[in-house]
Length: 87
Image (cartoon, rainbow, N blue to C red; front, top):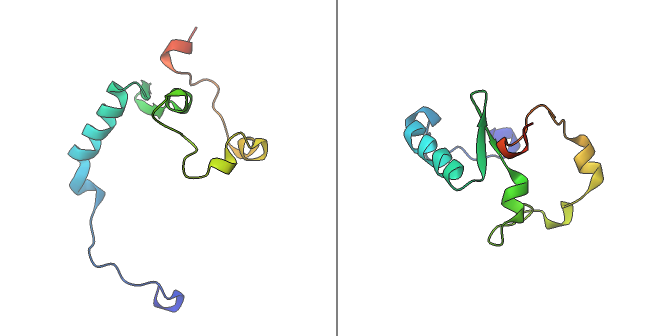
């Protein structure tokens, strides 16, 4: 890392030290309706988040919203649907 001129971290943390906080955070996202569980996995509902008046999914890169080239790069599992779209 030194050859890349990357500084050493001041503090090392492990994600295992924060599992309860992470679980609580994910539960909060689910309770707010922006994520859902399917077969033991949690999925973020980007459409619901983006349709909210108080959030913008493309906030960090607004120029990439609707970019068809970027969308084509994403592998989509069409078998996973939000609970309200399952039929």
